[in-house]
Length: 443
Ligand SMILES: CC(C)(COP(=O)(O)OP(=O)(O)OC[C@H]1O[C@@H](n2cnc3c(N)ncnc32)[C@H](O)[C@@H]1OP(=O)(O)O)[C@@H](O)C(=O)NCCC(=O)NCCS
Image 1 (cartoon, rainbow, N blue to C red):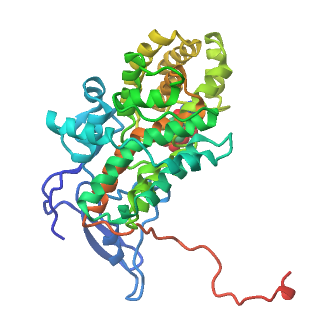
Image 2 (image 1 turned 60 degrees about the vertical axis):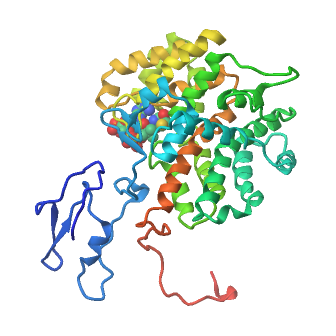
Image 3 (image 1 turned 30 degrees about the vertical axis):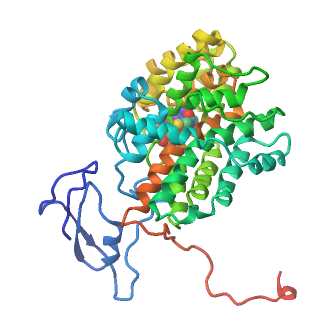
């Protein structure tokens, strides 16, 4: 099979040696499988058969530990070296110099905007922040103690009913309009969910404010005629939004791609992403960090706690990552943002415990040997709390910026000629060909 350089991680022009030779010891037959970008095509193994009517060899990969499901040019992640880039731009530079709105443009369009493009993009997003009044009515229908993430999940899915043409996903103009709406309305839905859970009146968007400032206004505005957050808090939130905008093929992004591959509208696909993020293994680790810090109580208790972790009694939450085997670059940036936030809000005693934990763990052989470093969740919960967010809002705060990443990945998927409806295979382990047993004959 001919190969071509698609500039993936492996890259390079194929040569005659870019193949894998496999011998099937069942038959003694040898196969040559092309290697492209450091991968072989799972379908190439289908030719490996013991007989003509054999289905052919499959790969078995629960949790997709070693399977690339797409080609993507959006986010580059090198976990061993702690590198994260959006469209080739290092996360550190984006966090320092860009804004979330510009990053959303970059993720979706592939390039940084010029001033005119950025102004137009900001304008479009700003004028679509309002939601239909009926959305408000049905948020009111949730119980007083409904989890804001559950409300966000339901309302973002429900938006598809307000924009029935959203299922025309191959119409570029329609598609564009709906992706603008998604980015614009997520903070509004998130804030309405929060206000509902607090029993407070909903606050309409203020289109004079920046994206993060408007969100803070919708969360916290009470009787004042205008809510204007401290610029340091507004910037810290914007940085958190930048850091959470995309992270290549994680659980929620894979959910958006899989559901979107049925060609459903983008609201429903994004709702699938919100659902995946709702799970504690994905969007909830920062809450676990806060609970852990509270339990430790004071910095003096840190050595005992670490000893317990090393004995395997529990895990040091906010440490370790499936992909990063080095300092998560986002954790470094968040730590700096935390310092800025605490300058405004006053320091949180939990920060001293976190700092002490990090210091001890980074020097301890147990953590060094296992390449366990702080991840993005180690400090983010502390910042969210300092911004006045209750823990139920943590995954919601993750979902707002991740929407731009989900959309960028969804767009890439629906325009990728190689993609079809996602449909994994299975190894069937159940019973076969049993005759139905009448009720009175069952044991
Ligand atoms: C993120 C996480 C699930 C990744 O897990 P993983 O890649 O499957 O790694 P493993 O569970 O195989 O762990 C490898 C080794 O490190 C240890 N380890 C991993 N994370 C640890 C932690 N946070 N504290 C203590 N030990 C940890 C494991 O016990 C294991 O040790 P062993 O080889 O002696 O058995 C895991 O590091 C973790 O649970 N972290 C805490 C939760 C968290 O912060 N999640 C947010 C991720 S963004």
